[in-house]
Image (cartoon, rainbow, N blue to C red; front, side, top):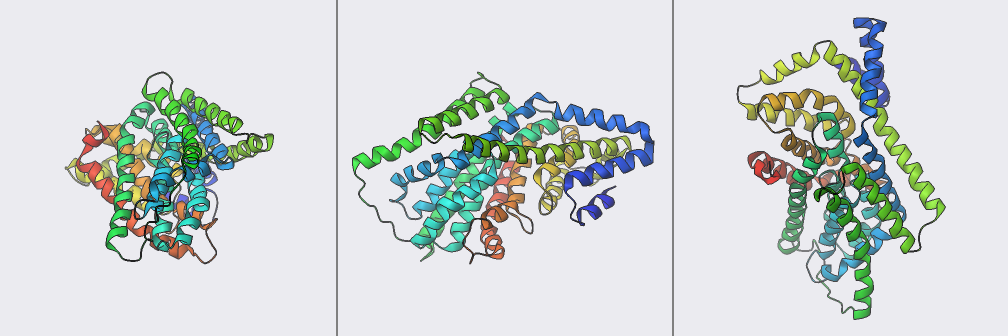
Length: 420
């Protein structure tokens, strides 16, 4: 089954259709036509999950942010603190990435936004090109870890664990990773000559400071309403996602940016993104269902558990599998193909599935940056200056991949960071 899966993927067929085709071939070939209703019932239970409604909502939030000037004003407002520190614009970019991640949880839009706002400014000021590229890609990918992350929502659906618990557990690790990026920038700024320009603390008039601070108010209000309503127990994740869309739409109205074209463009982008996620989910649900019926889950469980009597080695082997798959497959496919197999093993070994969810998301952070198919690099390439090649981007990402692996190791050694 897996040989056929990877063989068809090498032909260039989309993952969603490959998984569905392989599932149908093996279902009919192994069990006959009567197995098809089992596939459809499994698919229906996946797509009819109420929590799944939050996915298009958060994607729509990101799409509206993409088309409004909220992110641009947020970036401009952060210069009030950045122009007094060496490497200030790079640190400002990471802070803005954290706030944008807490608003929508979608990485593609974040990287494109930061690639248009921050990268040209850093290059113009004389920042080292590799550092500027790495900060934009790694910062933009923080949407994977910081709630409300779509990766966490899909993990919760696939692993059947509380998404609210996942959000609570992943917040501190996400901020910790952002802190690692800031420390790395400061280290390079103060100990490597010529990497960043000397700070130029311009005097900003009070009136301009007030105008810039206004750019912080609306994004912080949206973040407060979305995350505050979840953590405060006022709203579920699905309800909070709708609150977020309402907040971002209201913000565009207040700013005088709302148009029908903006809403239509955001809706069309949401349809395309969520359509892709749903189709991959349908295909992955089908293939995992057939795989389970054929006894595959028992085979893989005994294979993985048989590696060692030490649960830690089994966990590290799973992390290695996810790391290798992350080089070649989309995170949605990885989540929906592996988690139905991995999570029961994790529970059997005595580990917390919520903690494992945070590890999974941190691992997917690495997959967003890792060659040869790291999506973050391709997102940035689409808006980067022509003289920046994909090779340049991937080389710039290597130190940040190292920081992500360090953060993953710390979470494995000190699970208490997640509060579990």
